[in-house]
Image (tube, rainbow, N blue to C red; front, side, top):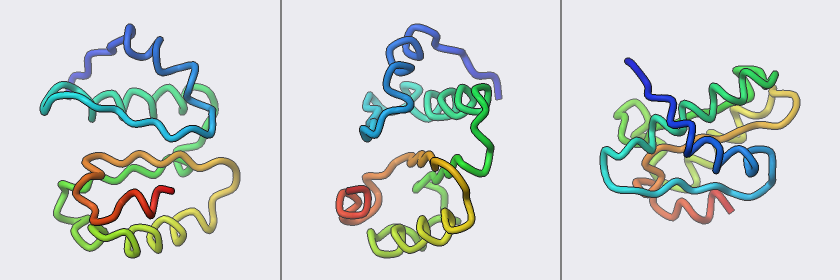
Length: 106
């Protein structure tokens, strides 16, 4: 898949990448939010972040249907980060599909 780099958006996002703030990308359907998540991950990898430090979950994908409640998602994240050294970066696409997602993220 060919990704458009969207450098103007990346310039706006970069200052916030290594802060503890939760970042939320919003926009119309099919406007490129998923691509932006991928571009941010690429950027992190270029700066030395290891691939295993990036956990990416798309909640529209049926293989993740078991994670559509806050408790299941929380347990899965804890399981995945258990063996990862260093900072972990979480990328959630279509997080609104998770019931009570805000409790898990908080």
